[in-house]
Length: 239
Image (cartoon, rainbow, N blue to C red):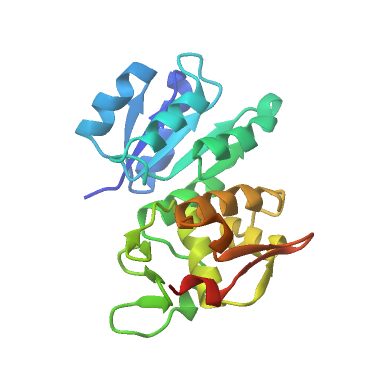
């Protein structure tokens, strides 16, 4: 079965262009042209990823992304945002609303296709070669563990609410506990070749990951290293 990509836009020409590109790459597409359509469309056709056109006039992209991420049935679906050059400052607000990546228009299709391939084929990046060779593909540190095959994590027996980026971050930190990771290193992990990305955007994703891990604010296992980056302290993930 072809992976399905939902495209949220009221621009038929842009949709037809992207549909042509995506179908040539083996994807099926569905169009969401208004905010009122989203629940019905996503209920009938659960997509593997969503692309949001932030220049669309029929809906507010921030509201749309917030609605998708607030619903238990759809919050795990990766979202990419297409941002007009005049509204590039929207990126931080979109990330806070739950968007997993953003691309300033006009963009070459390669970047979007790279995002969609990762979103629809499981989480694959350069650190995948370093996965531990355990039968169940589980990495555990105290009460914190992640399952590579099922792509989820648990902390103190509670299943974590992780975005695809959150999963990659947690996996990397858990593979190298008690090591300090710079923002630049983590930005490369999240966005691969997107050198134009501000490493400070890592702070937004780490903050979201911390909320998932939060049981006691003082015992959050991910600590900030001032002016540098982050560290996962192994001693804080054990009851």
